[in-house]
Length: 261
View (cartoon, rainbow, N blue to C red):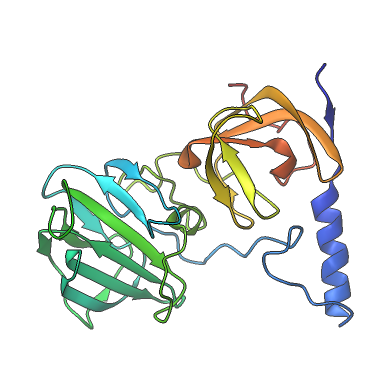
């Protein structure tokens, strides 16, 4: 039996919470399960490098690894100022760019750097060429995203890039490897599974609202969460798995305009 019960709970709750916050009655905390997602940055991002993602962000890995041939072009993901360019322990060589929104992106293991410290770069500008220097077993780009220059650990680059219109894997000059984001997740600790089954392996966990591109959807295990029941799951290629439609911020249980897998 396919159960597809759902109402427009997040939008209504979000408007109510925002009204209370405006009145000074309650704080509107960023990252809360039903808080409105962050506004899309004014500047669209750029693909850092073409290739195969061989390792995603996780507790022991602060970024993503994109593998390709030696010499593959590496591009800045946004406009900003180069704050580091040179030798670096573990990386062999690295480049760090402070962007106009205060975030920092980091690029490592290249064999050739094409920008210098204090240089102004534009989104999509060629900054280096891929190599295998430092602690590396093959030609690849190690890419990190940081909230600021003072952060010690990189954030998950997938939602960082997705919020700027880039989905991995990608092609420089063409934006993301998939069409632009068409939905946003809601809630925290949202599990992305290999298949539309509750016992399928968890491949990622989203810590907050994330812009995503849903490629297709299918019926799978019935999920009961947040007071809703739904057996529809969305496949998100950039995340490599499925999310129950309960955590896709849309009033419909079966997402409109999305084909069946």
